[in-house]
Amino acid sequence: MNTYTNEKTKRLSFIIIDISIITLSYFLAFYIRSETYVTRNWDSFFTVLPYIIIISTFFLFVYEVNPSRRKRVFDYIGSIFISTASITVTTMAASFFFRAFALPRSVILLSFIIAVVLLTLWKVVFFALKKSKPEKVLLIAEPHEKNKLTYQVIGTFASKVDVEYVNYHAPLPEIYNAIKRSETIVLGAKDTDEKKSKIIYSSFKNGKNLYLVPSFYDLLLSKSEITPFEDTMSLAIKPFGLTIDQQFMKRFFDLVVSVVAFPFLIPFFLIGMILIKIDDWKGSIFYTQKRLGKDNKEFNIIKFRTMVENAEGKTGPTMATDKDPRITKIGKFLRATRIDEIPQIINVLKGDMSIVGPRPERSFFIEKFKKELKSYEYRNSVKPGITGYAQIMGKYTTSVEDKLRFDLHYIRNYSVMFDILIILRTLLVIIDKDKSEGVKEQQPSSKLAHKRN
Image (cartoon, rainbow, N blue to C red; front, side, top):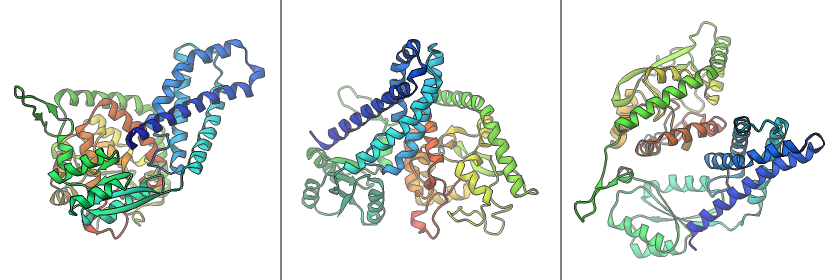
């Protein structure tokens, strides 16, 4: 059995264990409060139990709670809390919908606390018992990618790793030998050629985990359709962007989500307005700025002001840094909690933006990035979003090129379900400090990091 199959089996085992723990938490909650409950309480619980399992499976998948090679135990705390909270709220709704009114709310809430504790303990035990032997990772990339990818691999893998680097231009026999003595292969971005294909085939032949940093060519081929010319297979490669029916569905989804969410966002509107006025009574509450939307159409984005007035008056267009003196004290809080982004719901209702999509950028930076990255122009083939795939997968220090890969992948693989997944995972972004900072200062221009939009 190859390592890829082992990984899938391991993930499935983790989900089964997590669901078992969540189910056990309900039995423990009933046991703790056993003197106050009767048979009909148990009957209601067993009526809802199948739905609890389905709900738990969904949210455990969405928030990636299962221990994988990608996270440290600390990273799971937020995932565990949000996933179990989501399970709890949805379970309450399910018990009402299926008329299981005898399922005590105290049991549901108590099971939430027990589940958070038990799931956290289980992750701690897993990492404590995990083998200490470093995983052998082979990095095959261009020399200029070596330091960046090595740093990212070490920081991403949950287990200890021993990274071996081989230049992409090294002889194939040398690369083949390195593949055989490694467990996982990471192949840097490279346009498809015969050598790249041979490296991929060798990795599969030897049963290795393979991670490929996609080039624009790779992203272009994704979601292509098979269109045979009689008995000759060909791939129909569609241009970047959404079809008419996809645009209609996305707009309908945006309107429904915006209208439903707006009443719940009013308290956050009030919080943002009050805090800004407490910090600076004479300053403006809202901040508008010209951004480019779909097909590079200009619009005014609306946000809560988080910087001093006229922040770019002397400097011109400048990216925010992680310790930017222009950001106010209240502004740091608003940015960290994403409250500053909430007024953009107005942009969504107006049709300038979508709930999910690439973040809108200024024309100054778009022209700058297009000179360095030719494929950057395809990013504006859809409406910009309040949140996006690049925001949940990257950090504010993520390079423009890496964020572009996430954005193009999103455009290529758009679906309503994908939007829902991104919206749900945005909750994790709010509690992740690394995702609420500006770019690191003194970063080389060749590796521009994307600012907080």
